[in-house]
Amino acid sequence: MEKLKIEKNSVQETLIIPLYGRKMCSEKFPELYTDVFAERLCERLDYDFSELEKKKDSFIYEFGALEAAMRQLDIKWEINNYLSQYPEAAVVNLGCGLDETGKACDNGLCKIINVDFPDVIAIREQLIPESEREFNIACDLRDYSWMDKVDASKGAIFFAAGVFHYFKTEEVKSLVLELAQRFPKGCLVFDSVGKLGTRLMLKTALKNMEIKDIDEFFYVNDPAKDLNWSDKIKVSFRGYMLGYYDMKSPGIRFLHRLLARLGDSLTKMSINKMIFE
Image (tube, rainbow, N blue to C red; front, side):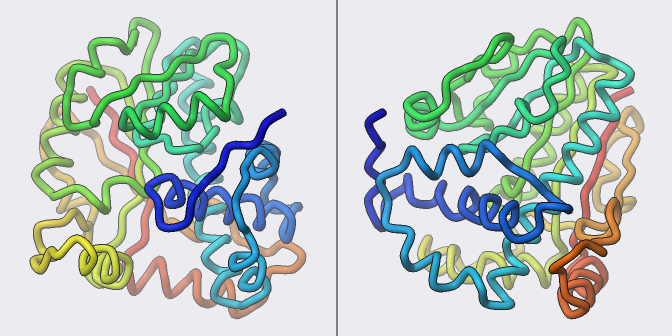
């Protein structure tokens, strides 16, 4: 099978970093996390992984890979929990990139929907064949027309992994309120960090985008307070790194767990769940 060429410093390359992180974490910590999809996808790419390979044994890069893995594990836990109540629901990946969490949670009954920008969906469709009950929507998340294509008659759970950090607070709030109005009994799951975490995470990205006012971007210091946008939305949250799993798996160092605890407490890393009533 012909490989897809990914150029350095391209939009496509931004999809590779989290993909490789999931692959690496699956190789290093298999008892905690497995991602067969990430490994298969990396094999389909014509891309120079040498720089990433050099970093993969460093403590910081290992922790970055663990961050990516824990987020996927947490979100999978919430999706599976929702599907236990609504087994034929729509599972909607917001800003999907090359992520296949929907497939990883497939119970044989649910619908899987992936939403992202047209150029991202074009790359995805070259690499990832749609499975049965799965389809892609090429659309900006802030253009709510994509919601018209979601059949939520048997439930819907929406999730966004590493996406809302790049949105402004009002954009996230508007999107959430629109989802709540359109999809009663639906659920939204997403990760967030506090203001300090946002500054650290987006420092380079915002500099490249020539954006100076980080306060415009979405961050959550106190989910119960900061996400209290409607009395029709029930909000709950857990720690991102240690809220679902204790990370006591072979190969994970004490310092990894310590940094995870600091991440959850100091930078306010959390997984947030919103139930639309």
